[in-house]
Length: 68
Image 1 (cartoon, helix red, strand yellow):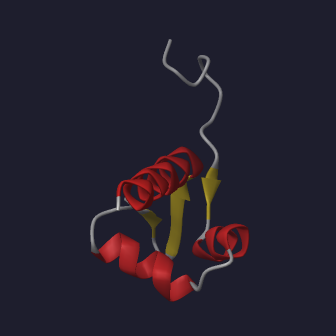
Image 2 (cartoon, rainbow, N blue to C red):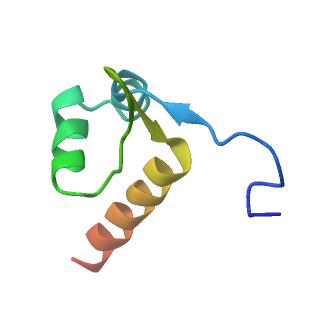
């Protein structure tokens, strides 16, 4: 049993969903991927990201901004 409560599927989101949720461009999401900040899951041309990883990245960026 993991931190996801067992067999529950982890929520996966698209670049568009991330950009809409955070009010940023899809290019920004692509840049985060290029920097290694987000790990995409690819099945053919379909690209998805774990919502939990997006949430963790945002928390990290907020913490870094508070330290600056």
